[in-house]
Length: 83
Image (cartoon, rainbow, N blue to C red; front, side, top):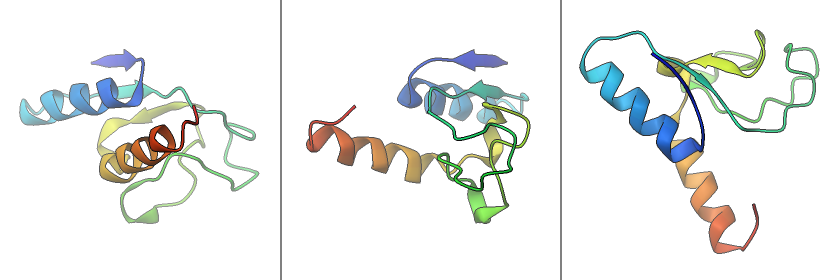
C-alpha cells in the first residue's frame, strides 16, 4: 500500500495494512530540512529513535513511524491553533 495525505489518515492506513500483514509506505506532509538524513532535524519520530527518518526522502515505511508521537504532536498543535 502506498498512501499520502494528512497524518491521522496515514496512521489509519498503516494500522489497517499492519493488521493484514501488508507492506505500507507513507508519503508524509511534513516540512523536512533536507530529506536525505544529513541535517539530523527529522520531524517524523520513529520507533526506537532508529536514526534519521527521512534518509530516503519523505516516503517512509509505515511500520517505522511512531504514530502515537506523531498524532499527539499534531493534537497539541491543533490546540494551540497552529498548522
